[in-house]
Length: 72
Image (cartoon, rainbow, N blue to C red; front, side, top):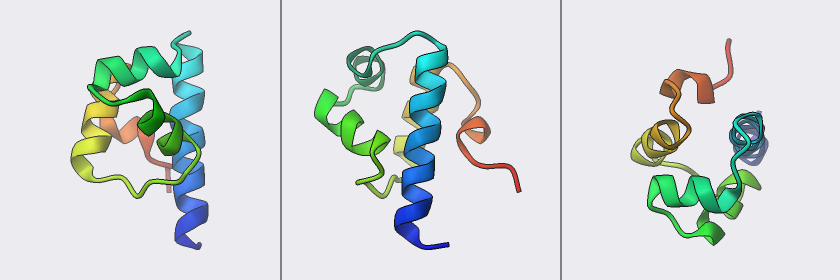
């Protein structure tokens, strides 16, 4: 799989989980100490995320980090 597809899928997964928790991008960004524009780029697959960023998002969503990654 190409990297851009992987990043798009990860961003879509973050967005789906955020929406199931009835959170806005602004709320999640605040929980993660990110700018809203950064969260928008993450959800649209424009950013190659570091482990620390994934960790902060998982904590902001109150989920284990493994829930952000696809099952193989």
